[in-house]
Length: 373
Image (cartoon, rainbow, N blue to C red; front, side):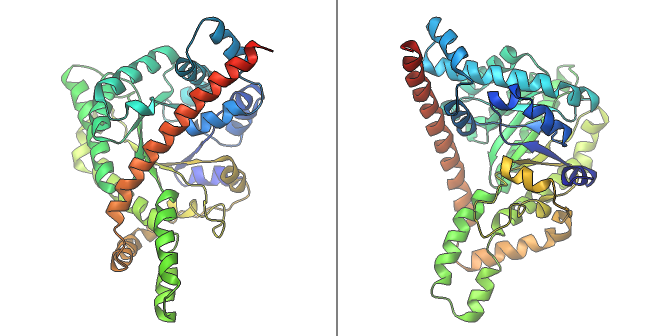
């Protein structure tokens, strides 16, 4: 049994955090599914990289340019095309699991993240254009996003709530999901096929917290240094563990029982940003400590390769009691974790927006080059 299969036996699904025309056309996605991948995610940063590599998109770019399509509209059309094809490849997984697995995610334009009406309109447009039931529209966990999630889910559109960093943000995402289900019941609509995940970002938290701990280590005495080193690489995991406890309290508790009895599915936590950004950590650093039932880990390509030979252990629930000690230790060091989590949301939005604009600029440049070739 391969590592991915062992993880599935422990109750966690593995999704692949990458998509490209080459991966789809070459049979690479089918091979990943055969190895145990049960879903695919993408974002503007991933798509920018995919378009920039090779000539896989040139024919579509030429065709769209001939129609007079603006670069910003090209971004949407190319993403829709890739997601539609990936969804078709994953459709047997979706059908075979009765809609539990087999999803592909596509993100709303990041420049609309602070506008509820625009986000809802964009989600409806993407959902209708793709026309596949095994798609999730990614909506950022912003003030505008919470209401947009509720409205979109209430219309039967699957949602991947993304860029969740804090437990408080997770609470509001979970509430939006439950409220949307209640809205559908009130309207006499079924709730058994509405799907949603809550994407909690992990390693980005450690990137910031570890940098501050390393700064303190420069002048720390031996006893203090030992304590500081014990906190390295733990903040993001402890934060995810606390969110998982909130998930269990809500979705395995009596408050959700009535919705479950009507066919509702829990909104599974999805661990995102789980590639090791610190070379001192193993490629599977964010794997074992995040394995628990009813969870998804969306892993980048290099982490997925490491999983193939990895012997996983489900440590999340076994170590969940330690999460409070980690948070207390970080606070004692004068590190304001809630402030860091809030800033990471803003940075994530800015990063995706930068990639989105860079992609539009890249397409404009490529369109001009292709027009003269």
